[in-house]
Length: 234
Image (cartoon, rainbow, N blue to C red; front, side):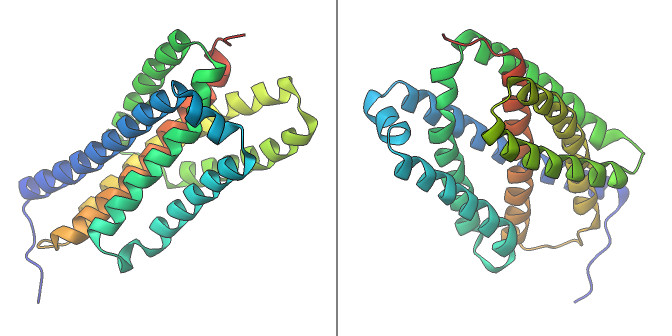
């Protein structure tokens, strides 16, 4: 069956609806992560269970990685409800592990850093959505930078250099600022390339994957900024 071409106005409406869906699900994920993180940090039992037992902590980390890679690799083969459930579960588990920030940094610095991160993220997203420049080359460069950050972070686990950690954080801010703009443009391009009459479940799965991508950009940007701007509780 041949797809019916959309008018320019219909295309813009479709793109706006898809992007809105992506950001709505991203907001759901971030809200759930924040609520779970705050709850766990205020529960002595849960905090001890997660951070006092390496088996539980690393079990959560491994579960998060499995969920992310499974969702990214197999989303086309699963039901939309399954993809949504996996995203929500990942956001909750991530909140449990990220509750550590409430034990390390003051709440006022976490709050101020969150708003700085949100403003930066919005600015980068607007740029990615509106720029006429093709950001593909920028995205490739930022991915290489991300790989470098991961390698440097692993090395710093053994070196334990505060100076190196700070340098990684500054580079990380630059990398995730670029990735936010690139990923936003990629989502817009993906929406523009979709034919008319797509099944609702296919659209939902695309929105979930897009939400996961931007969610990860936001969380990592926030953590990098927090390492720079956060005030320690000690």
